[in-house]
Image (tube, rainbow, N blue to C red; front, side, top):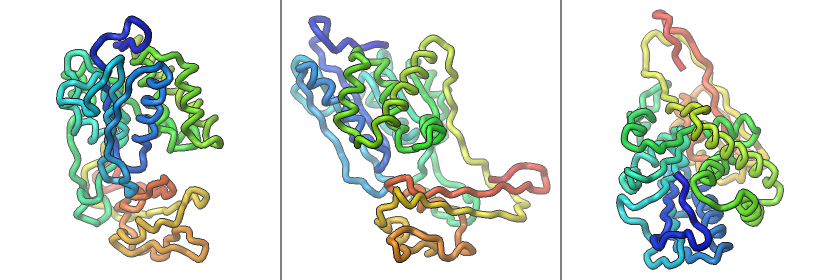
Length: 307
């Protein structure tokens, strides 16, 4: 589906785009790019958002409506033309706002489990999370574009451009020229990240073009294995990207094992490795993706891999 947005071909009805995710993923950046792009075309724009959720795990959303004439800033249930989800569960939560017949669903299959879903802090504990698969969503929303944007961004060397990959996918659903997307992107992102963001935009756009031709596979949600018995060993490694850390200490104050502190340089440091259960709360709450947790795998007696 391509929605025409320019010139006399623009329908009288505004175009409705809903962007959702969790704090720290860049929901507001995506909405700002889209709103600015519409302004460049002298279209009326209304934007309504919930932001300020710097602690990752909090729901963030932004309604963007643009057209020749726009009155309300919010999108009614069932009226969104495009739903862009930077996190899978948030996409499912807002799916009822998408027009099921003509709507386009664009989603990162990344799972960010809210800390309150991890009541059991033991290693490999199960966390509550929606079980809906991408295949099940496609049955209801044929125009579904689900990809592991986070992993693609990691392969590029900067996980934080995952939102721009989705922006590239969004560009294939709207009729704005690529040159204008990139010009607006350059206005909004920090200058030192522009090259990475441009690369991410093109990555998302090319993937979507292949997907529309049936040449790119839709990615399924990566799910954590169920807890299995027989685990004998485990090792949790903690990494912090110091140049990304702002010393906010959000994770330090919420770490269940009190394993983390700010060191003399104002950077997070793991001071009690033995108390770390690998619950990943610090990784999920870091607003700047500065913390990386890696859990070594161990083989249970049954031969199943436990991660």
